[in-house]
Image (cartoon, rainbow, N blue to C red):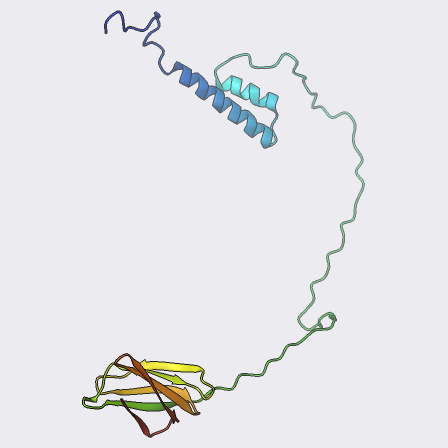
Length: 191
């Protein structure tokens, strides 16, 4: 390094880490003091312990008061009665009376029996038609279920007993047929 770029001072490159070491010791001391203050020790006692940990011989504060530990007078103690424990009720004892209770009852929903409705779609000139979308609507026009025919034009759906209208979608056109009811009969739709 040339003289122009050399840092000034005779302590260049000496004592590296000394400042960091001092800061570390101070931080450890402050943490120890805070810990003693938080967990029942005194700050003065904490300072003395930190001072001793740093290697100083005379860490006692000048205003330390010595406490005489010899007993002076006897202190009379009075007998106090502990409250009687509450007995645990036995299983054979009846429960304590309670206030009025509201009981909610519900009636079970009847199980709907499903039946199968079989639909076969036949396209004129082609015969059996697969991949045709089929939608079932209830008696009031509400959507019930849907499916797609297999390669033979067949579709089987499970529905509650009733009357249904069937709409099929083929060649970009919807066609409505029905009414149909579930059962053993196969319903054939011609497109």
